[in-house]
Image (cartoon, rainbow, N blue to C red; front, side):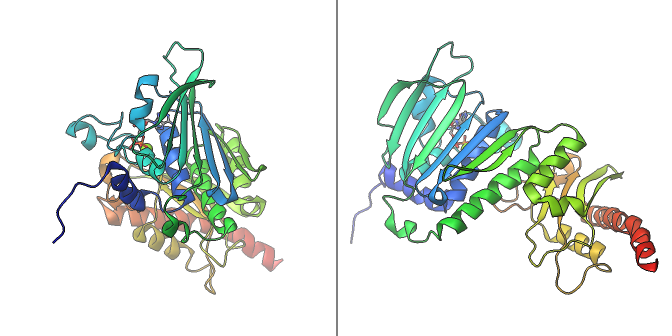
Length: 345
Ligand code: ADP
Ligand code: MG
């Protein structure tokens, strides 16, 4: 019989990384969420070779104090919750204190930051390369905010590296993560570069017109050309956003974004309501395109069903289903007479 021994910290982190860090896109997602939690208004993302060579994310958020930098890379280290009360009223996207520890255990990670209230003129940097703890802390020039650089993802876990798909596929997933964020946080300026090429350059948007511009950049001009803007309210529920008329459809459900209180979700009930609304106007296995935002009182929806699976649970399922169906059906019906007029002429 083998004897029982505690896992080394590094191995424990690498095992945890198996759940948090599946591929480059999951690194990007975690880092973006950290930037948002830090109150960033501007986030720049740069990747090379589909993210497997380099992922660099820079934000203008609140930064990390020098004395906390090393701790930020440790497992179960978080500034976001301190007790059970905090956990039950969670406002941040993260709170597990796992991401940086996991990512740094399977890559060469550099964390550079300057805290907004540090009073320092420069920043500080820690580096970790698949190690238990940050190896070095050194001064580094940096404006207020944080940069995280992740190089050579999975360099020390070859079995996982083998699971990565082609550069294009991995980049496509990163792009999708960035698009989802771009559509949920119009107030944040966002850029994405791949292999020195600018893929997205999005300025923060306030007015409906500015938001619409971003929609066009993210979803393409054809989407915008065939989309109507809706904004409807009933029984304490609000649905707004852009729905494409049946004149624009997709062979894949790839232009479907649905947010509940700002959080992107995939949900059977929601899909069903939307499908019903399009039932009479879209056939042949085609899929509608939309970017929709449902807003309701936080107490009427449970978003913490699963942190990564984008599921929600509505208190009153029927109410939500009917509201979605009616709103969309009306939006599509309102434009139909014109179409008929056009064909009648
Ligand atoms: P979590 O987000 O669950 O707290 P992470 O491992 O992602 O865990 O991050 C650990 C901590 O490092 C965070 O709680 C936060 O204090 C700090 N941190 C990470 N990224 C940033 C960032 N971009 N800006 C400011 N602080 C950050
Ligand atoms: Mg986090």
